[in-house]
Image (cartoon, rainbow, N blue to C red; front, side):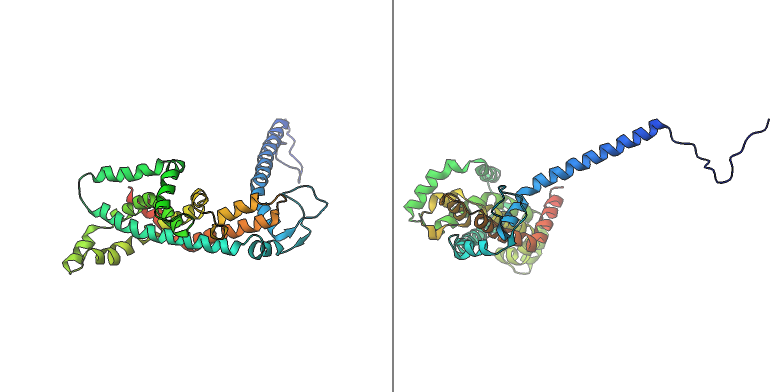
Length: 302
């Protein structure tokens, strides 16, 4: 019996069943739906980040009712001019914030470097109890210590002074930084110090020339975290400061938010971007210490 062979040029592949085509189409529809949801959800999440830049650098059209997303009328720096040289007074606020936060971080690093070294290398009774007592301070809410802190600052004459804010921020940063630096100093081999002691070095020389340089990633990581925590401090300056010329940036933003019935969102967003800038720059330039500190801490915990 003769069989027919397909003519030259005809397709030898069998047509795909309709059921398989339907499955493929449904699969593409599912994938497209997932991506559409992710795109819309990303836009919703990014609106709070897009709006500050949009409001700070542009003029909003008068005929637009929406507050957040709009097509800008024109590019402008008037909002930054008003925030820096106008009623925002951002330069004074930034100066006060940089002075107090930097001073508190440096003071906390000095205290915690010495304290962390003593806890790491020293052996004394109740050492473990002391360390856990320091850690326990971290879980005490700040509102529980407001009255004692205020009374202590009043007795020392530090109310409405930047010195009082520096000491308060330093006190709040010490428990966390002490534990972090103690852990990094533990990772430095004590044999290196013993070799230096045989050459005639004392404790402070080994700390400054051997231990501290080797633990520098941990010091940098602790300093960055302490800076960000102090930079965002709002409650402590609110309690201690009453003079507007001594306000820090968070207090200045709060004052600008409640002091006027007609809110200038452009100026507020410009001040918010200025407030974010120092912390962002510190992270960009010191991120290597944060990454090295995180990796060293992970290796030390093995």
